[in-house]
Image (cartoon, rainbow, N blue to C red; front, side, top):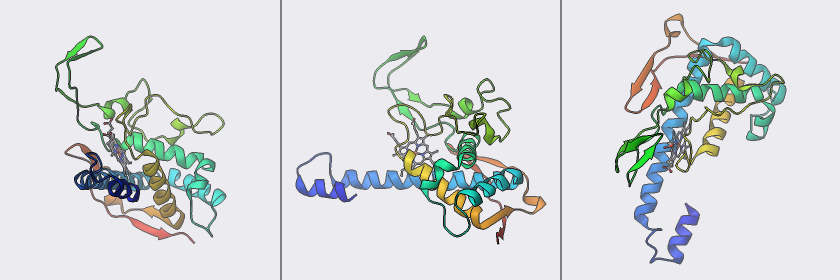
Length: 224
Ligand code: HEM
């Protein structure tokens, strides 16, 4: 924002760096950058309730790499492959932007033999990509180890595209990954997350183009 304002002041005849654009970019950032991360974390905590063994393994990794006396920082990420793999599996499983966002083609084009008339509405079905059984055996199961090799190192997979793909992929990827890692590990460092049996079922709720978990209550037990 500071850089933007500086450029606006330097060249007040610019058609690109205007107050109107700044307002629009700022609201885009807030819209695209808040619900996405918090919604992923809602899914994450629900999945930790449903998979206490995965939650315990993450806690052990936090204990080993971060300890109890300091807070997790982004510098710890590379040394925490199981947590990283869990966050990747979380994004695959949750598919919080299942149909990506709307795109359009200004000119007629052909793709894999299909003619797409100009100005079509184009949605990429990320949900199907992340539930393709050829790429992900047992796709409806939450299995962080899919993203680990035999040596326990994180592996990248071709069919993993929670942030979209190509030129118009998510602009906030580095920020989103840092936020997810920090919130997730900081919560799990301090609390064991559990729930009453009534809360222990899984309710998926599709709202507009976002997939969200139905609101649920947790019991957060402080870790000593
Ligand atoms: C878990 C978090 C997030 C997920 C899963 C996510 C996912 C996505 C997806 C699927 C798209 C559409 C890509 C496409 O059309 O191919 C997108 C676009 C975008 N995202 Fe994110 N996003 C996240 C967080 C953020 C954050 C933190 C920011 C910024 C602060 C952000 C900013 C944007 C912007 C500006 C676009 C539009 C890019 C363009 O049209 O060129 N996102 N995001």
